[in-house]
Image (cartoon, rainbow, N blue to C red; front, side, top):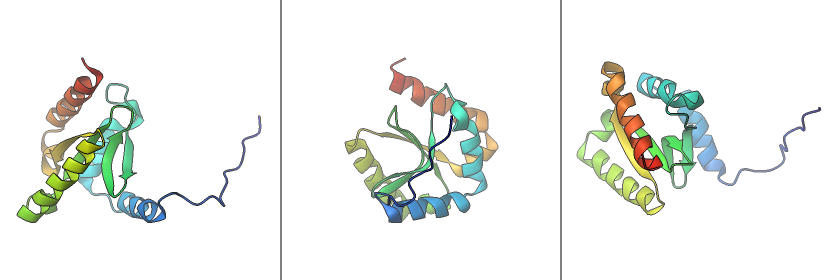
Length: 130
């Protein structure tokens, strides 16, 4: 069976968001790579996660669309007063869209990945109603 070629003339709905996502993926830090390794390929309770998933006007580090679960891996910029304030506003917006946000501290992903994986699995179980 012959595969159909992608329609390259079709423009994305949010070209700025797509460009931002591509840049974020290219510049991912070690924290994000380790967290992605935990959830990619349905490795966490069989759930599909997307990396750098645009939910305009924001972009989620990792998103399970089916469960409306977002995982954010927070680095130093999120520890400041201004960073926390931006995160709170963002989380409120995402909650209004039906998402829940699980925030993991970047260094914890490296230091104690088993604990973070447990938090992710608990969040998935909650969304599944288990």
